[in-house]
Every structure is written in structure tokens, then in C-alpha cells.
Length: 158
Image 1 (cartoon, rainbow, N blue to C red):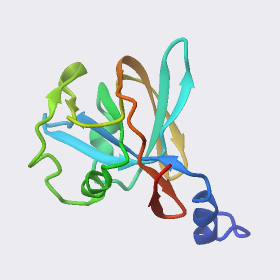
Image 2 (image 1 turned 60 degrees about the horizontal axis):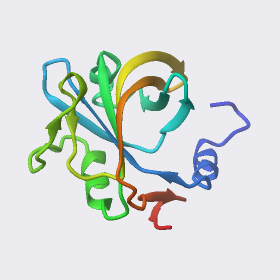
Image 3 (image 1 turned 135 degrees about the horizontal axis):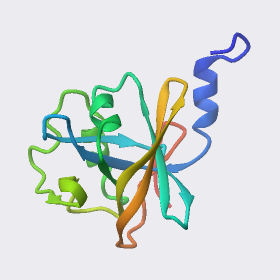
Image 4 (image 1 turned 90 degrees about the vertical axis):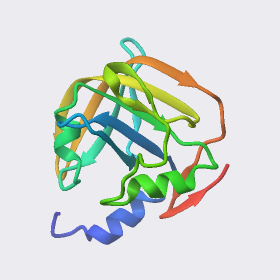
């Protein structure tokens, strides 16, 4: 980081932007179900339908996501704080008690969410200590639940 920007202060300032919480899922390099919590989701384009998210290069599932042909982005509903925490843990068997369905290219789809975007991998861009992944939306579902929100390092509600 630049000498004149304090990393901790910068992160705290970024936290002033309220975001939704997502769980991103894919099939790993060995065919295993992989998932993680992320709040770096954003829309890119309506035509074609493109969305993006970013993954830290130090993430334990980094290689699985950057080599994946497809992934699903689940926008969590306001009652899913425990699911967000589960998928944020390192080393946990995140799918042990989840009855996921198969989506595009076999990607695991969670049973409960506010919205879900099933994507094929479209582009990847280097983003410093993260990789920016752009997905082409193949299918989406919008259930219209109120979202789980994150602001200043804490969960919040509308």
C-alpha cells in the first residue's frame, strides 16, 4: 500500500459503503463443492448480462474459483447471518448440512437466498491483492427477500 495511506484506516473508510452479502459457489478443481462469503459483488452490464465479484489472492479457494468455468452468486436474505458466517470460516465443511441443488455446469445452488445469479466465467482482471471475476449471467432467480447488509464491519438490516 502507498506510504501515505494507512491500510487499516482505508479498510475502515471503505466500510462506510453499505453492501449486501453474497455466498459464491462453484465446483472445485477436484469436483468438490466450494463456497465463500463475499461482499464485493456488483453489476457490470445489462446487455450482455454481466456481474462481477473479487476474490483475495490469499483465499484458500482462490485456485478453485479462478479455474472454474461457472459459479453462482447468492445474495443472502436478512435472516442468513449464520450462513454468511459459515461460508466465511476457513477449514469448515460449509456444505455438510446444506441440501444444495445442481445449477449451471453442476455448480451448487443454495436452497435459500434473496437472489441467485448462475454465471459462466467471462473475464478475469488483476486487481492488486484480489482477482476480479466477471461472469455472464445464464440464469437468475429473484425471490424478493430483504437482503442481509454489511456496514462498518457489522451486519445491518434495512
